[in-house]
Image (cartoon, rainbow, N blue to C red; front, side, top):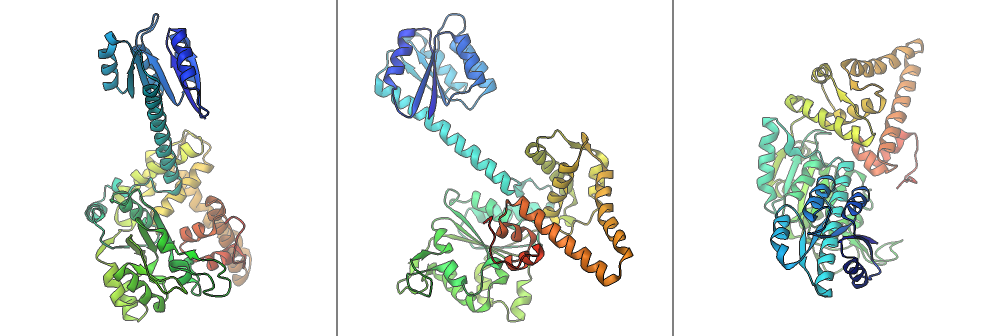
Length: 457
């Protein structure tokens, strides 16, 4: 249900608008006192506002300026008599959505209101998507880097994004390969179509063809209905194959045929299906070495690596560490409702760490410190204390025999590590395994759970 507020000093006009807009999806709230109307919309911003431009006590322009300062997202349609059209036009230049000249027809009123409400709904969708992107970590746009190494890769990615060229993204675990892939998609002509990420490590070898290409009814035991594959789901958009180096060699030939011809054949089907999509791939492995070992097909490598991006590890871009840390501190401050900053000494201490887990490790460290911080600032001592806790747990186990201590320490660490990842990903095992850089089966082992499924998924 959309809320429309009308502020006009003529009671008859307010009532007439209420009658004309008697729609099941819209509620109309009229005000003849501009000050009372302003107080109401400031406290309860509507989905759209119809505002008279000439009223005693407070003009529409003045009310609009106060509302825009507090709630610039509310679309405002001015109601104006013939002699005040110039004022309405000026207000539109200041950000008003539209204006209606009195007297107006019902169809003109409906059109203006519907357009204003559609505008507000579209803005809400954008806000929702932006919020979702931030939750997924995709608001950490790679273009914010200050590193010359990273900027060179970003420039190459920006050029390639404007085309449909296949891109292979290389880099250590945690360097932001999927983030870069999503950014490339967002800069491309396919940005409004699906982005379909596929974790190749999470696909069981026995089901990989069915999962990617789909299957027809009766293609195998348990195929009770036709199923569209993940590649088909990327129709018109971008297909992202993460950890492409983990695909079985025998399936790589079939994938090569798809990359070459952009056609798939569902398991059990006769006719091929044309799929129009952009292909992006990523891996933290040395594919050239795998080719030499016979573990990756050379022809597939060259079709995937039309453009190659090499994301540098965080230790090679120290100029980004402080900026990334500030970004994460601000994000988690909002998420956890804190007003926490960090001292200069803290940022200096960050530069002394090797960050073997790259940006992902930095992000997780900042989140952990923000959760546990009780003061107004994170200090270098907080970072040292975190490192000391890891050392201390090993010292406590020094009273045990080596093998027992080792098993106890590793078991405790694995369960704690996996459980924290699982909690952060809201029970989604695939997402947690992807963040850990392992497949689902290995992640269940870390949890101490040999199940092949999880209730959170």
